[in-house]
Amino acid sequence: MRKIGSVPIFRVADRIALGFAFAGVCALGIATLVLMVDIALRKSVGFSITGTIDMLQLAQMFCVFFALPAAFLRESHVGVEFTTDWLPPRARAAVKALAALLSAALLAAILWYSLGQAAIQLRQEDRSVTLGIPMLAYWAPLLVGSALSTAAALLVAGRHARDATRRPA
Amino acid sequence: MSDPVIGALGFALVIALIALRVPVAVSMGVVGALGYGVVNGWSTIGFVLGRAPFDAVFPDGLLVLPLFIMMGVFAAHGGLSRSLYNFVTALVGHLRGGLALATIGACAVFGAVCGSAIATAATMGRVAMPEMRRMGYDDRLASASIAAGGTLAVMIPPSILFVIYGLMTQQSIGKLLAAGILPGLVGTGLYMLAVGYATGRDPALGPPVARRSWRERAAAGRDVWQVALLFGVVLGGMYFGFFSPTEAAGVGAFGAVLLAWVFGKLNRNGVFAAVRETALTTGMIFAILIGAGLFNYFIDSSGLTDALVAWVGHLGYTPWTIMALLMVMYIVLGALMDELAMMLLTVGPVFKLIVALGFDPIWFGVMFVTVCEIGMIVPPVGINLFVIQGVAGLPLQTIVRGIAPFVAADCVRMLLISLVPALATWLPSRMAG
Image (tube, rainbow over all chains, first blue to last red; front, side):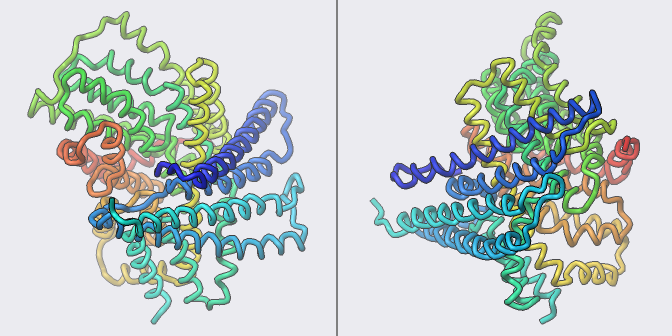
């Protein structure tokens, strides 16, 4: 994981990204509490809360897609580094900048085409199986998360590009 | 160029991008989308890019992942690892290499509440490394025992790798988790033998410490019930059909948070750190799942899997020869890339081959996870080596110099699971539900 630099825009971006990540985990935490109550009621008095899985799935969408911007901004990725570790620092920064640009391009494409899919869901008025939650609610975290992740990847690309073009001290 | 060849070239391109430092998730995603376009026509890219990320996260079977991650993170931040280490040290610390044995034992038990090898190695590293150094243990044995012990977390349930393998191959997650118990125990025993072998050759590696009285041992064991309770409820509940895997994961996550909170081991900063770690780990894992989702759309449509099965069938090798070759391939691949990425990249096509050859899918899952454990402690990219390097501030070569007995122990375990498949299949076959 990379430390966030002292540049103000990174500090602000990190706070925003972490805020979304916290909100996502809290959503999952609340849904887990509902699940606990459901299990307790079901096992004790045979009463079940309707739509627990719908709620958990919604919470999962928020938890995952709201965590992505922080993961991209902090570069918490699974990757291989030893193959480029031998490069001089500026060349290594350039490689990292290109990798981050590729990430941004993929995330932007996901955002663009997911918007189309979400619009289809909206037109068809699709809803979840048990609680009838509009499917758009499940797409919303994906759209927000991929938009913020695109911005995060672009910021990271900019930072590495700056390092790549900076003269050695 | 035929579609299966395009699929094979896609694999090569993913590896090339990963080598160029592109994140695994992005490498798989980019190649998956472009490859799908090449095979099915460029106009179809929009469908796969718009659909795969949603489909990769939405299934309710995946709920166990963030919940098990939360359980492990809160158990680590709640101080369960230190209680465990103190207890096992009180029991076996007086033996030659006793603190290393205690590290292995504590890693195995901690792995029973934390499905991540990295988290287990990092957590136990912070607890055990200073203690072993203080008692005059050689850095090679101390660091290698933590790196290897940490890998037990992906075999002993709950294991994130087993969950993902189960989701990818449509196998029962409950049965897979149960399948890991005996091999995990065998692995723990073999790692302890590896410590015995290393200290037998050079006793200075791990000098014994003072024997504790039974009163001290009992006192050290006071807090260990929390781990036993969590493990018992989660795995026992699943094994006896009381909980579904999702419910068990929810109970585990809730229990870990509750225990940390009730026993006052988690302050405000600790809660924030645990939530942040849960979010980042979840984001990291699901990013790869999304990339793998895109890539699998491509591989499925390329027909590579069927072509691979047909090609291997024409070779005329026996199933066990093919299995041995696969394991060698995985050991090499595991030494070069992350285990989760290796699984998501290869298990789709390989699984079909395994089933066609007549191997038990649950047994293969256990073999695969064992190979993953080896990959985690073998240079150049054995992830646990880097974790311990970071925690202990040691040169990588110091850890690598101590790791050989543990890798040998893993190879012996693979051999045992091959010779006695019941080690992996007996418990799942006795499972309720």
